[in-house]
Length: 388
Image: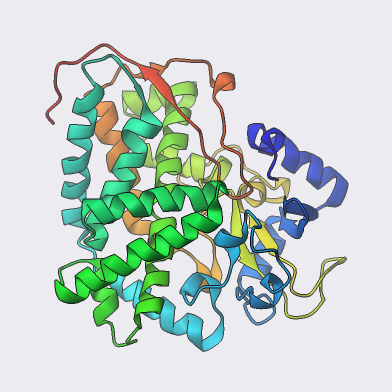
């Protein structure tokens, strides 16, 4: 799953896995790191709703994992909701959910527009752009910074560190950089509180200490920048290359939201995630899963399971792209709003936008977890400036 071949055509890999192994597939997340990949929808739902047998705490597993393992920074234990179980998970989850639910979605809409317009104006006069580096990444990054109340200088350190962690390139150093930058943010918000998620986490009755706060912020950044960027780009690829959406979305019969739902089924931004670690050997179907070995839910594989297959995803939100059960994403409403507004701003400004290369020439980034393009070059009639 870490190879260039898998990144180039994961759907072919899922089909071959299903033919050979069924719903539960033995894989390697990195060299010498075995795991079970769940590509059956019903098996995934069973696992995601059974935290007693499938806890998310990886500490027993990671005790035998080398420190330089490229996927360890993404999977290792942290005192946060994503990597905890039982009472600890409940405490962290309550703090995160309360802090996210207090986000003013009307104000967030204005924030996305405020960020999107100057980004578009930075490249609209040139008639070309790489939408990953010039639009989706900086928009996701700046929007998450705004929601967390993070100043630009600290946010830039966080962004560089997050990219290193997700790509597995010098991931250990990226993890260290991330913790240092987020400690600075915690110290700043303690001294200068504001109407933002970081402040609300600090002030929550769970009374999180500095280390716990850092690790809640790790998840919020990790689950914010990378998946938002990928969802924006993957949706734009669909809109710009698929006649069902290119014509219908721009023509008005299908909405941007319909395109997002299609992508969340077919190419979700986090394609393989929701990792759990069985406490003891456990039988799922006719397969025994080993104790303490990672069980990874393939949201992309499960969503495209022929057992639940449907060619028409319009209005259908039964996909697993947000996860399910007690670890389901608590930020889906803000995420939908950010991505939809980002795409609408871009297409309103540049309605004749088109890819600069054929879809089969686009390069997908390697890695077992994300579904992410390295770049999305586009061309369009040059526009002196854009003002909505």
